[in-house]
Image 1 (cartoon, rainbow, N blue to C red):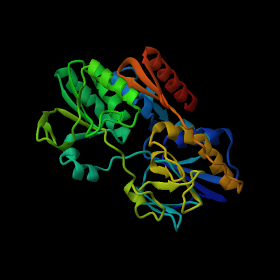
Image 2: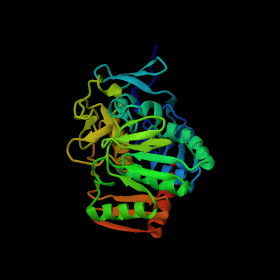
Image 3: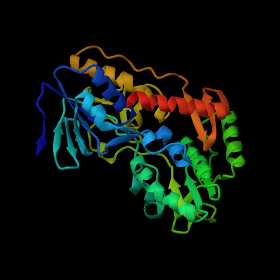
Length: 372
């Protein structure tokens, strides 16, 4: 069965990531005449990843961290299919959906957010599928978190956070704050925690981790079972809960899509956030890679991409000139440390303290209030 709504042009928003929720806000303010818009997203809400560590730490309720989609969909006037994509054919301009239907598009924008490929993870770290708790998709992770919290109330857990990028570091901090009696180990592989940050920030992070009793294990994990995480050195790290905060992957269905992809399988886009191979396809956030410049795969850039994406989608459907999206050279990165304390970076500059945490809290709450 082919799902094809009426209308002169069909624009499909695939995914409800941070960029697309801003597109919905813009559509509510400035509709696109003559364009039928369909949102494809399996979840009734969008989790704001920037506040999830605060939820784990106990500073926020889950509702504080979510953007309900129904009000945005209603105000923007788009049609919402609560399902997900399983295949994309860029030549035929069609999307196969998990419910068995096929959706045609004239214009497509992809913002599905990051995923962790379970098969790849199992190959790289045997036992992770059965014994690891993946942090992506965030909807699944937050739905399982109450079970971990309940376990933590009954016993002093031994927790291993595997992956020491910003996400893994914030989770380790949050777990320590929420579970003071737990043994929290942060496995960073061959590099120190926060290795992509300037050395001064790395030192701040390592000191903050040590002060809070989080053990830094600068060694790679090789496998997991029900009782331990096994390390490359041959040692076994006793573990009750293993959280996988490792790198994210491109959706598997992109491989056969016909779109130009980068070497890691993400959609290759130009300065307009448009596919380098198919001019009727746009992409933003973690599912894409800018080929004209190097950007960190960060939620900060996904949020920044939203307004520019909304403008170019409107321009494309009108046949108007597109505008390049120029991300800032330096972005403000704020790393929450579990307690009301945070470390902030702006280019080579850094600062820390309770005031940085209050700044992060204010920015996050303001962003959520605008989208709601």
